[in-house]
Image: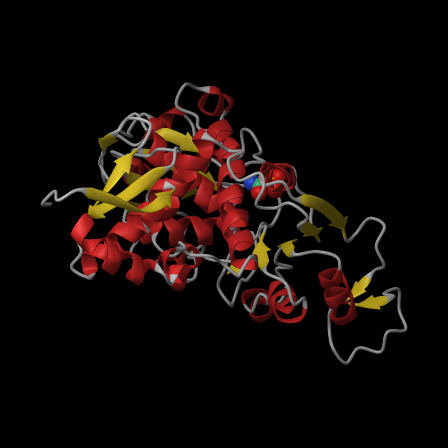
Length: 397
Ligand code: CP
């Protein structure tokens, strides 16, 4: 870049500066990013929490300022809903933003001032409840938590039902009412595992999106758990030693019938970011192909584990139309233990928690030095902060 006197045309966060620089360069205006704290130009892949500037030649300053006058598309991926990996947009930016927030998690504590998050739980939670509330607090938001099954009117969810039973209120009134009291809504609503079509339509979550009038994000719905997968991805990026690690997701036995939300999302996210993904399970536990596209399916668990860098254990019930929601196996030879981990490449062990010890994983593996279950849970605060921040940025339009 010729130096005829540099001029600053943008000051902000690293990931925003990257977008600004790309816009300028795409328009033929050479630009570079300067780290003010170091007074030096740095790599575009450096994760830094401090403000940086975008510099152009003095002769380009007027053109650059004109180009940037419409700032709308310099704002990275503001969101209205968050239900799937594609909602994050540019994944490199999302990851950089996550690392920036992890370094300085209160940096945006003014963003949520006088904004209210409503968290609606149709099902139990420990991590999602605490981490999402903490994320909202990081951003300066007020938080309301509604446990639908504890203290609220029992809700009818079907249209056309004569409400002469124990359900006092219909979801179609309750949702817009909830929307009156908040700016953003998080919803947890698990699959019922009786009617596949209903679960895979994401009926409850989509009704919130349609009728609340507010931005809505999933805190685990019937078919996906994107906040968990985002945290899992951050955790793998923090620990991987090769660019494209081998990530093995293994079914493991469980005494109760569990939804496919976590394995669906994990498969979707890990293939989307380009890892070498292998899914292993007994026959009959195939997940919907829309989530596993790009992954290899291996029915021999030991073979699947060979050379793995990361092992992600999870139970799920059958997803096929024929056996939807059923437990087809409780074979404890699938419990992840030293036998399986010994054929990996010293793999890290992962699980979203809560986990049933000695059904899903042995005590020794989950307590071992390669277990990442606590860092994954810690990163739930980071994934939720990124998502809420982006939604809040969309509100200020
Ligand atoms: N992993 C997870 O979502 O945990 P909770 O069910 O406790 O929220």
